[in-house]
Length: 325
Image (cartoon, rainbow, N blue to C red; front, side):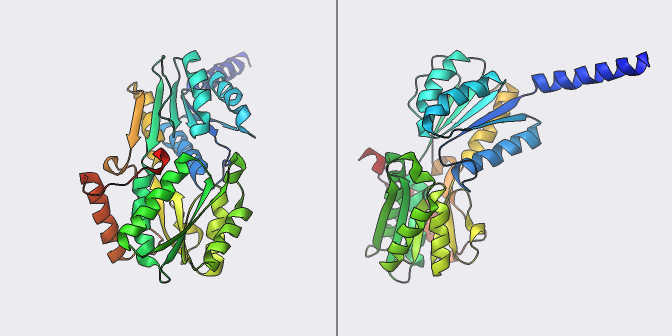
């Protein structure tokens, strides 16, 4: 009996020790919600991939509002996170405050590129969304039969104006006569999670003649794409490949490869090769683009989008960043 008990105690100790010292990825979601089928959910799925493929544990925190972010980030750090992923520009202040206090923890700050990093433990990732949006704008203009397309953004902030600006420039590049209707959902964080308002804005654009609508609105975008599908027009998804959501009514999705960023930094953290710094990620780095799987992009559209991508990379096409205007 004593021998059996000893074996149990040793086995428990080994399991406890393994869990205690395992690498852990912590994800702090932004106000759009964990299951927004876009920005946040892509981070969640990537964290699951880190867990399954790299053998890490996972810690999560979903704030009810932005005032809880710093407290949540501290809790994730205190629970032994090896790598903390801060999702969105609204977490910049929290990262700036928390990261120096935990110099042995690595941080990935998505959509943040301006934080001082005295401890040297923050990978700051900003994406050239206007470049990827330019490509789907080209595709939208070519796909439109009415000569009118739409854009629905989430919170009216410089970041979302990057999406809008790239989209409009790409559409005009493909068709100088294209008409573009654009709306933002609101001016507070609630704008990311209002599918009903997204649907209303989309219906108004459809009434105005739009037969392709691009959404960059987080959870609100679910309503945008649903309204487009219900009306029998084409929707364009964002961040991750959303083409599966409404087969037959999804033209394409603008890809923002924060999944690659997060997974790569987890691998580098495990290998001891994590490199902090500010990183600007666009077409040249393979970090924005467009999706064709389950979409309706024709060979002609793809050829035009790929030609535009090549022009952006070699500098022959300039895409203005509307967040700077």
